[in-house]
Image (cartoon, rainbow, N blue to C red):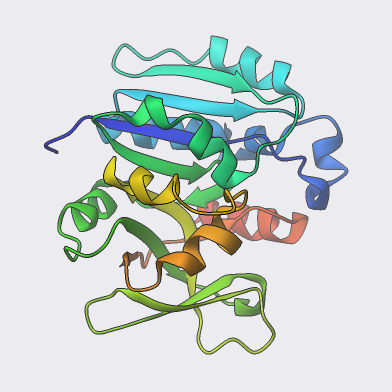
Length: 238
């Protein structure tokens, strides 16, 4: 890539739908295939040549910090930033705009599970349509009413977005994995009111300016115990 790669991993959630598992363990440290979700993402980032990763924390933050003390990389700098009060997915990104200066950025929900590596996604971002500020990973969902569903034009650019609606028009879902370049912040920082949530406030404002990159590999939101069980079965069969 022409620019260095940096990533923000969102890991501050309470994981209420995964209780009782998350009463003692933060959602980003829930194991999949013998490794915490956060560790799986860090390995993918390192393999993709990411130079630095920032992880926001809130719930059971001391466990995330302790895990990272045992996770060492000679190639990628990793640090956490604690949020005493949650800033929201868009609010956290805006708060760390300076971290991405001069870099291609990734925004990642660390409680998602992705089987594929990041190379194809990053290539899609490099080759995006010129009007697009953002690249979004998409996947085929078997429960589209629980996802953000996108509709695209012939170039794979998002033209409509339906966030968790009954009977959505399709099953192509937003994977909440995004790539962007610094110019994206020129638009994001001018949004009024200042956005808090990425899916419900930022995405709808960018119709016609989001490139999609579909994956045919397993991709799941580990938001419920049922989804975790499904992911564990999939990962055992990999």
